[in-house]
Length: 162
Image (cartoon, rainbow, N blue to C red; front, side, top):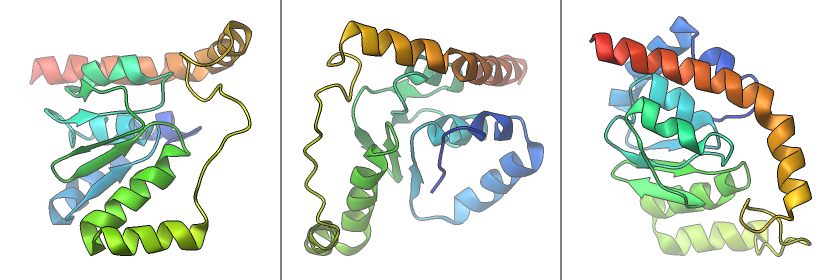
């Protein structure tokens, strides 16, 4: 599982982390990325040619990494489960549990967790959020999104050079 969030963009240019992911990936049966962890897996070259998702503020960056962007809460492509925002990680974990142990076990886990989300507001995705809320969050995320974009652009340039 590769998580995202604040601090993740620094790892996108941290060579020991990239090398670790490249080394361990061939030994894994499944890979799961949560939120902007998809970008970290992408700069490690693990998702080239895959369909995937990530947090909505960084969704436009997936193409730099050779990833086909899909605007869904979670995406399963071959051995990779990618999720959008952090709460999508719960959905992805349940999907991963079903892939590993079957849907009955995944449903048992969901019940034990009492996972039956009913958010108090209908603003959990940009297309649903009021414009003022969307504008504020977009503004607040601009600095970190810009840093992530630079890291993705650098990866794309290196990829072009071969």
